Length: 340
Image (cartoon, rainbow, N blue to C red; front, side):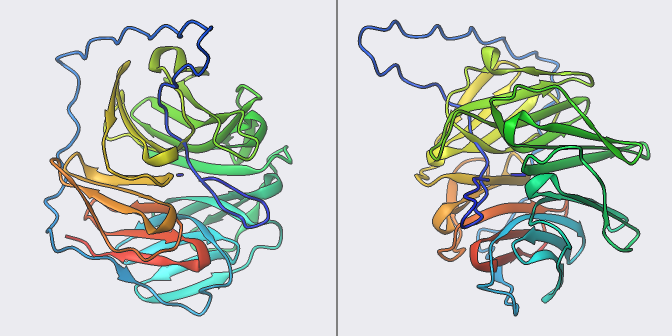
């Protein structure tokens, strides 16, 4: 996941990489890295489901609408999802919505391993874990930095969970305890995503109230390193999608979507002008990006088309292999995309 945060209004974003033009006439332009050719044997991205052109988003109305922003969502099974934000932890089951406030802090991001396991992180370094539908249990993170992203995976029965946030904070959950992973302190991480042995942590440097320069930290099973010297990062990144190992799509500031394969970048024209805060899909012909002011676009492998998602700022999108997905945003907005 995924999201710009303003403490007063609790907004969450996720940032994109793009080369920045040199604004000074006297300074020489920065050299552009030479792209590495794409290996012919590289695994192609899945094509994705053939979604009907008539597909529409359903509005899920609930009593907490207008009470605060929902900042992230995780799909846990058919008809089931968990969202987090100012109201607390929100369980979505069909059209039914239940809220479970947490005792400390506002949760900003959630990752779930089906219905059996979920972890949320939030402001002030807060972290909670729930197993097998039980109570949410606080887990110390050892930091008071705001945590803005959590992501994990289950490989052969072994869970690997990462969390990231302000001041270059990057953590890994191992043996039920969080441990610090070295990262650049000037980076603010907004999203974490991975596939195979590869994990990317996305965000920005600088900022200070406005989008900063993009940052991508890359791991191949060990330590994280700065990927931007290879990828020519520029603008802030807010979310990512990794359909296969060594392929990364990013969504970010000012409507920017970039596809990276190895060290080769392709800037994708979506027509969006608003900041894009989420990206998810079942494959290269079934891909969604969402963002501010109700921006919701679907890519069918050929063209982008808008879907009516209202006018609220959208913060996160997550779905299942069936094509079912949920979108959440400001004022408690929840949108549902039926399975194909």
